Image: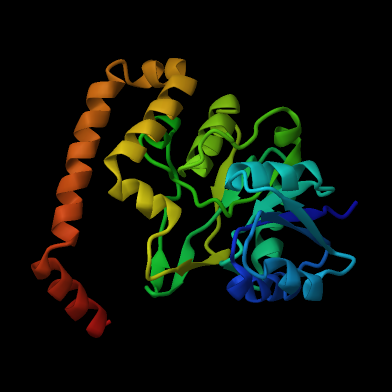
Length: 273
């Protein structure tokens, strides 16, 4: 039996990029896929763009604006595939993405997640790398996976969903905490092929906005901590004090990256690459 992949594309006012996103899906070497576009109450012409794209493999669902977690959950509920791949509407897939990811699941049916590095394009152009191996203890301190990683739909059917209360961001991090902590011994596998291209905007993304706003960041961390308190205490009995130290060092790093000296250094490094 040939496995089917459901690509879930939440869209909120991304009409400008949506066609490019869908074109990258249409160009996949692996062809047994469906794409579900969830319009999260867009106020631009996203619906008009989608009408030009709909076919027997691409579906469109409109919902009132409820946030990306709700949009992803809604899309997965309607999915008919064996595997789920979330993809933001302003990003694109590379041509062998589905083929390369599915190869891992085919070789090892126990695989829980397949992930990769990404290529950043737009305002910033470089490769963004993630670690090949990490522990649940490390994951509790920092997200280790991009949201565009593939997992079997059966886990969603078992009740592991995106938390719709996390409207400020980092909902993908909390989703991976849920999934990996509930199946700790199953493989989480990185492939060398960069699955997707992450569009960098001149303005801030939702997650970048969170890291610039201490109040929002504190709310999100507190929500995730309360939801997974037993897990955090298993590895970090003094998690709150640890979190304060983490925030302190994040601020120090941000000050370094924003300094004039660092910007000159970064410019020179990129110039001679």
